[in-house]
Image 1 (cartoon, rainbow, N blue to C red):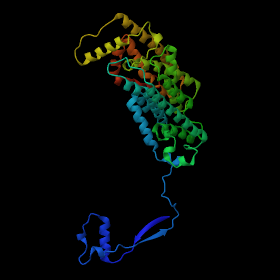
Image 2: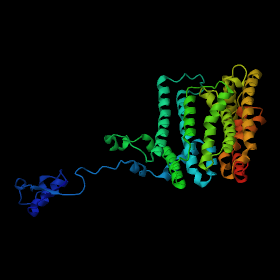
Image 3: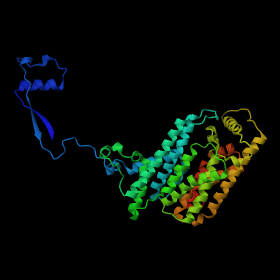
Image 4: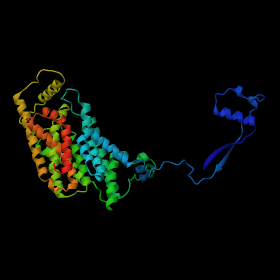
Length: 423
C-alpha cells in the first residue's frame, strides 16, 4: 500500500505563505503578506489517504533472476572488450583473429582474451617484484603466492560455473538459498566478467545453431590452459626439454585446438597438425621472451639445453650495452667467447626442436580443410623469427631487433598465407 499526503487548502494568503515556507526555509518573516501576522498563520491539516494498488507494499526491487543478470549486458560490448584485450596484449593473435571466418571471431577472441588474462597473472606479479636492472629478484612471499593462487582459482571456478550452466541447461544458476537469490551480488562473480560471458555466448550460440546441448569449446582444453599457468607460477626455469614441450602442448596447442573448434573442426588429423604447430610456436615464444623474462628473474631456456651454467648476467649486460649503443655512442659491450658459446648452444638447441615441429606442421597442413587453415596463421610469424635467428647466428638481441623492424613483412606473409591457404 502506498501512502500519499494531500494538503487541505484554507485561504489564498495562508496557502501561499505555507508553500513559500516549504520551498525555501531561508525565507525571512518579512515575506508575510501585509495585514497577516505570522502567528495567525495556521498550518493546514494533513489528511492521509490510502490508495490500493496491485503492486507490493514494498518498493519494487530490481530483478535479480539469472536471465535478468545476463540481459543487463550486451554481447557485442563483451565481444568488443575481448577484441580490445587481445589487440593491446597479443598483437599477432589479434591480426590472425581478424582473418578468421566471421562466424568464428566471437569465440576466437573470447579464448584469446581468456588466455591473455591467465597468462598475465604471473607477469603482473613479476613486474611488481622486479627492480630496474636487478635480476636477483627475491622469491615471492607467501602472501603474494597465495594471492596469485587465488586469482588462478577464480578462473578455475569460473570455468566450472560456466560449464555447469550448460550441463544444467539454465542461464546462469544462482545459489540455493532464498536470501542470496534476492541480491545480484550473491550470484557467482564470473557472470560479471565480459570474457566469461563471451565464452558463454560462444557455447550458447552453438546450441541454438545446431539444436543440441554440446558446448562448442571443449572444457578440457580450457582447464589445461589454467592448470599449466598455475603450475608455472612457482617455476623460474624448466628442467628439461620434455617439460618445455609439455608446457607448449598444454598452452599453445590447446589454443589451436580451441581455434579449430571455433570453425567447427574436431578431428584427429587436424589435432595432430595443431599439436606440432603448438609445440613449435611454444618453443619459439620461449626464445622470443628470453630477454624480458631474464629481467624478471626467469629463464625460458630449459636447464638441459646448454652445457654448464647459463651466463644470465653476461647476456643482460650485452643486451643493455647493445640497446644503449643505438641511442648514443658507447663503449663496445664485453665479449666472452666461452659464454657466447654457451648461449649459442642453448638457443640453437631450442630453435632446432621448434623448427622440427613447425616443419612437420607445414608438411601435414593439407590434412586440415580449407576452412580451418586460418587457425594456423600464428605459425607464420614464428617461422620468420626462426629464420632470422639462424641468419644472425643465434644472436637473440640482434634477431629481436631485426624482427621488430620487419613488422610489415610479417603482415605481408600472414596475408599471403591467408589468401593461399598455405604457410
